Length: 124
Image (tube, rainbow, N blue to C red; front, side, top):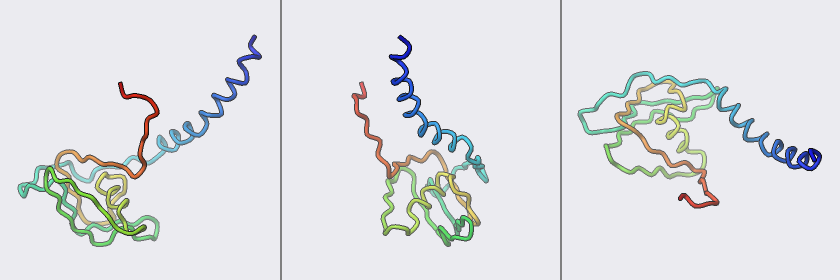
């Protein structure tokens, strides 16, 4: 009887290896710390980047970025491959550390990733 379940058990274990490796990699990531707590901005801006530089290893990802985004605004960042769109989003989300400059985020930020999540079943 147990021999009948063995192939199914092996299949389930093999399907679990990659997700477990991804989860393990995520859990081993260094935690990022916010440089300063979010503080209200009198100008009505929810996100302010001032003279932001981001560098990883010896590669410049962002150079002297200055952006102000008002509360409640929808922002779409477009550009050619490799221009820094994802690096900008990761910097705003504190997933990339700033080499220099300042980032102020007042309130919450919503982010729609490049990788869609498509469910095969109903949400209900």
